[in-house]
Structures are given as C-alpha cells and as structure tokens.
Length: 629
Image (cartoon, rainbow, N blue to C red; front, side, top):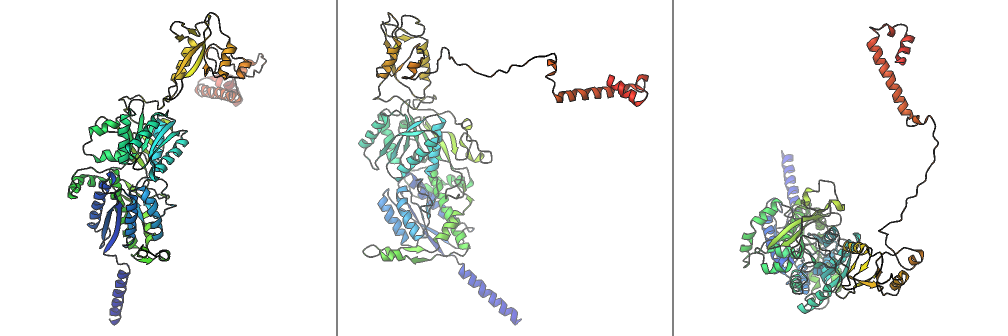
C-alpha cells in the first residue's frame, strides 16, 4: 500500500512537471503593420480583428492562450513603417503580420532575419521577395510572378506581340514589370516601351508620361500601379483620348481591389475605364469565406467606420494570415515550444548613441515557429492554405474581369495549372493539365469603344513616315497594274494582292502608291528596281519578273500568278510479264486462300459423306475428293 502511495505521488509530481514544461503562455503578442486608410488596409484591419476574435473564442486552437494583435498605421510612409516595425521588435513580439508595402518589406526583412521574427505579409507581392534571400518573410498572398504570368498568357491569347508598360518606379513596380518582361519573352513577346512614374508624381508629370506612351506603336497598355496613382493615370488617359477604340488596357489587381471594395460603383469612375481588363486574386467559395462575407457589414459598423465598404481579396488573405499564425503557434506550443528572447551581441557592439538597439532581442524559438508556419495545412477563406517548397501558397489563380457599363463581368480565370479557362480553377485540378493554345478559352470581351472585335494592339506611330510603294505606270497588260492619271488611283491584280496581304498584318501599315513612268509606254523595270536601292521607294509592286541580276539587289515575294515550283521525284522503271497479275498476292494472302479451300472442302465432306458414295471409301480417296472440291 505504501509503495502504491509513493508511486502515485511520484506520478503526480512528474505530471505537474511536464505540465509546467509544456505550459502555454497566457498571452502571445503579435504586431500588425499596414496602412489603415488604404484600399487594402481598411479591409485588412477589420478582417484581422475578426480572425483574432474567432481564434480567442475557439477552444480547439490555442487553448488557454489569448492572442493579442497590436496594429500600427504606417500611413503610406516607408520611413514610418520601418520605425514602427523596429518598435515591435522591442516589445518581445513573436511575429509580425505585414508589412503591406513591398518597399517596407525589403527593409524590414533584413531586421526580421537578424532577430528571427517571422513576418507574414498579406500585401507584399514583389516577386523578388523570395524565401531564399528573406527566409523569415512569409508571403501569405500571391506573388506578382504569377500575376505577370497571367498577364503574359492573356497577351499571348489575343496574339499581341508587343505591349507598353506603365508602372510606379519603386521596388513593387520595377520588379513586377521585370517579371512581366521575362514571361513575355517565353511567349515570344516583349515590352516595347517602359513608362516609369515617380512615386508621388504630380499630374503634370503623369501627363508627360502618357503623352510619350501615346506616341508609341503599341496600343496594349499594362498598368501596374497603386490605387491612388493608378486612378489618376486613368483619368488623365481619358482626357488625352487614350481610352477610346483601338486601345487595350490591362490593369493588375490593384484596380479590382478598388472596385470590389465599393458597394456602389461610381459611374463617373467607371466611365474612365470602359472595356478595360483587370485581374483579381481568385478565392474559392469556402465555408469560412461565406461566414466572413455574411457578417462583414456588421463588422464594418462595429468598427465605427463612417463609409460602408465591401471586402476585397486582400481582406480574405489578411484573415487567413491570422489563422496561419494561430495554427502555427498551436503546433509550436504543442511540441514544447516556449516564448523566450535573448540579446543580440551584434546589436550590443553598435548600440552606442541615442539608438536603443539593445532593447531589440532575438526570438529564440523564431526558427522553429517559422517551420511550423511553413507546415500549416487547412482550408481558409481563400481556399486550401499550404506552402510549396519555394514558400509560395499553392494553387495560384486569378479572375479575368472585364469592366462593362456599370459593373464588372468575369470573362474567365487563370491558374498556373491550366492557364486560361472559363471554368473555375478548383474544378480543373483533378483533370489533366491542358496548356496548349487551342485549349485556352475566355468569354467574349467588350473592348474600349464598345466593340467585341479584338483590337490589333498596334498602330503606326504618330511621327512615322508612310511607306512609298513604287508601281509601274504601264501602257500594256493593265489588268496587272493600271494607274488612272486623272485621279491617281492605282488598280489591278497585283495591287489587290498587296492590299489583301497588308490587311492580314496584326498592325496597320500606312503606305501610298507612287506611279513610275508616264503611262505612254512601259517603264524600265531595272530602273524601277534601282529606285529601291536609292531609297526613292521602300518597295515595288507589279508584274516584275524574277531574274538573277535583280535577286542580287532586292528580295522578291513568292510568285502569286504562277509559282514556277515543281516537285522532283525518282521514277523506277519496272518490266511487266504474263505473271504480273500474281504480284498483288502476298505470302500471307496465299496462306489465307489455301486455308479457305481446306475449310470449304471439309465442310462439304462433313455434309455429303453419309449420303453420297463419292465421299466414302479409303481415307486417301476422301482427302483427294476434298482437295478436288
């Protein structure tokens, strides 16, 4: 009995000790850094608060631990954002949600690497923010690498080869457009002109940039900006007549975020972007998404926000970001992790002066918590939440949205698995991937000018020179080329072929026909050809014979009256004989024929030998009878 009592006391002590070792903290402090009064920040603020409230009221996750998120407003200032991030590092913060800006993320990521504090950014889309360079930066949204791949597929789908890119000249804009250039090259396209806009540029500067864009040949414009500068550029573009028929505007997801957040779309705002295409980060229809969307209006009113606004895709990703961190912390504590900090000797060495660098400490469990973050796997408001080996969320996908009339119209979807499709991306992952051009599909797009005809995407530049096409002013065979000396009109079969070929080009080429000769007699064709060498003509159209001396100085098209092409093939002469009729019979055919004889004879013998004396007798006789048949 005494032994049992001692054993029970020892068991209770060990149990209490184990509970003490794996005891969860009462509170976990997390920082959040973004711009409150921005399109993304307004939605993120409410979404983060909603997620924190749900987590603290859910006993199945972080039991006994209260998750506290302190939010700081960077107010669209990179410097303020950097200072606030450093302040979080002084408060024993285990993780930071944000920053929203890619520019701030580039700077703060170095600090996070040193202090081993994971940063989960729902808004930094710069493709150069990779886990290789910044291992403690976890991107919980889609990288612009995938968005630019979607734009490149869209450009390739409509067979445009050159585009003009307008972008904000910061890390977010430059690196995004650089990624677009790489993706276009893979599809045999290119960015013909890059128009950079200085951050915080005045309208006069923006107008100068747009004027230069209007002088370019390409009419396919990719706009990669932030909401404020993007709307200002679109307003100026409309005033300059750059949103009319013939233009193609493709805006990245900054535009869809603005439009999705507006409960009532401003007709005046929409009038500046009729026929535009924009991308939206695709979010699947999940239970958590439906629950958050259903109570969104109540959450907005509870936050004492004067203007009602809707949630956009970044709001859903901010919501999932909090849940990612909660699941990771729960796994971290379940496996014996605790919250402790230690001093950084490097900061002590440079801590002299007014900067309180000694206050910033290293999170001892930061690397283990980072591993738990990278291992999360659940279904959130955006769909399946899981990271691949490169640190990106799985299943990147975008909606292709067409702005028409007073609303938005989804014309298709893009995913890195199936490319462009009219089906939802989540329905295609169980099917074989089809990335060939013939399988890519979108609904009909209404382009600027209220037309469904695909724009060519290219015009002759305003400062370009018309091509001078020389034509012989003949006196005979006028059915090929004829010039009306009174009106100057040029007609004929050769002219019709040339005009038809020019109309097949993806871009218009202005040209004018220049008659050569007086029309009273046929002109000298060698002199006509030599005018190309002297740059008097850019090309010559007519019934011009292709001869050797002319091919040495100019290039000719394929002849279209008579090609002159022949096909050479070897001919083997075969002798014929009386047995030629047997040549079609192969060995296999002879065998089949013999087998038929044998089968037919056997069948006849079976039917006749009982009633017909000719089929009776010795076996040799019967076999001969069968073969005779």
